[in-house]
Image (cartoon, rainbow, N blue to C red; front, side, top):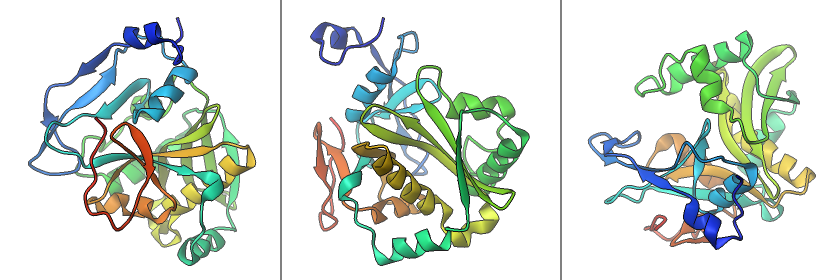
Length: 252
């Protein structure tokens, strides 16, 4: 049975669970909790689109959002792609990577993709739970059984430099994850992937690009604040983020 977001009865049937406290992945010494959709629920792309609007994300088939009692640092963000403003610094990133070729593929595990993913995780997240991923970890994290997931490959000649994983929904694209060759850090590949996704969303007439969670104090996420105008999910509404406002309240 699929979920109809216009139906109050279906909304009441969507069961959510809260995990026990666990170590926070962003701040040492802090605990975190996660709200997630019943794994037995028959998810659909329409349901997930509705849940994205409510600040949820996915990891593999699991749909979740942070739900910490005393911390509000994980902020859902999205971009209204037609209003996007390309700054001078972002224009330089775009021009720097115009020698790359881009192709879109269905999700699949290849040796080349896995080796790139493994190198990226062990370089960028060597202190976290994702370190030393296995081939089974690859698709169980990046793909899902109920959505339209795409792997976008970026190559310099024959060399694979980056893969951006995204979900295509009726009104939006959702950036799931991006991994790239860490030896090419000077290209700002993660930033370029977002720029390409913005252009792709414009090309296929999507209204939004969802970029997951933004943690302002996390250096690895700092690049997300470069894209303007950025909207944040605050007090059950999406509002344009004012860079001058120091404090943000999280979803409630």
